[in-house]
Amino acid sequence: MYLLNEKNIKLYFQSSNKFSIKNMNQVNKVETEDQLIAFQKRIDEGEKIEPNEWMPNNYRKNLIRMMSQHAHSEIVGMLPEGNWITRAPSLRRKMILLSKIQDEAGHGLYLYSAAETLGASREKMLEALHNGTAKYSSIFNYPSLSWADMGTIGWLVDGAAMVNQVSLMGTSYGPYHRAMIRICKEEAFHNRQGYELISKLCEGTEEQKKMAQESLNRFWWPSLMMFGPVGKDSPHSEQALKWKIKTESNEVLRQRFIDMTVPQAEARGLTFPDPDLKYDKETKTYSYGEPDWSEFFNVIKGNGPMNRRRVAARKKAHDDGAWVREAAEAYAGKQKKKTKN
Ligand code: FAQ
Image (cartoon, rainbow, N blue to C red; front, side, top):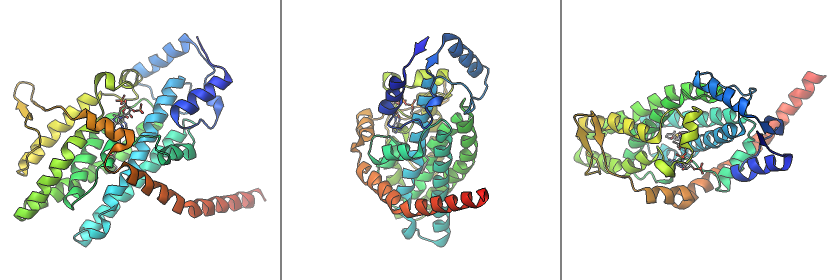
């Protein structure tokens, strides 16, 4: 039996998680061995866990951590592409880019809402993003330097995100599972438009081909790092897999992404900045070199090329939007009064 007193419960959720639980009644003061076994049985039988059902505190805590980081990634991920809207080379490209970026905002909203069903406060989640204590995907801390990056982001970044999210469609938490189904449909379009953009560049002038290759060279390793570290550097994996918060390991998903992407690049005459990348006829997979994990850890500690600018841009957007939130709240207040009378 695991006993937590009121003070410890608050500390447990507030200090270690960078966010608070709105309704402390959702936190179990006592967790018995029998409850944990019954919960594991439900997971093993493939049941989905819904917001008002019993769940271990650690299950709730880990989901909030992962889902809020996922939500932050979606909205921070709008920034590298937003940077190119005004420079899109045609109206068609501009419409595609705008629509894709708008989808990412929608994904952020589903995911914040899904995290709120666990009792997380939206204000606290955003506060953690703005004060730099919450993580978001490492990939968005790299700059978008050329138009080809708009293709590479769709093809590689959305491609990697999709491989991960298709696997998360099998997550055991109901609201996350449902958000993933919708998000994956949109992500497939994002991935295809990116590959189409890169393909067009590869069919173009020497300069355009070079632009596509240079972009792939810069984004390849950071895209592989999106799947996260392995072994002891991935401390959440073991329990997350047991509870089916995640359904496959970081390494399995990275391999799937490589196997899917390399033939696509080869079909366009593109090469990879990895001399160890080789097809293994026996395993029918590609073996590859070791990503630079010291670079990855440096980026997720906040020291990547764009971390400070990304967080500052998000904070400014949030502050600039304060009047919209106030107006919406005032309107909702008026509507509530009207329905009471
Ligand atoms: N970046 O023990 P693990 C997108 C952290 S969506 C930053 O392996 P876990 C759409 C990890 O949080 C992309 N941090 O952790 C789009 C943990 O730190 P913590 C986002 C990372 O959770 C496209 C520590 O390392 N997708 O791109 C990263 O079991 C284009 C130890 O790691 C999701 O968030 C990383 N890459 O596995 C938008 C999917 N990797 O929290 C716009 C949901 C690891 O203890 C444009 N999340 N860390 O301080 C997941 O699947 C998992 O959370 C992983 C990490 C796989 C990311």
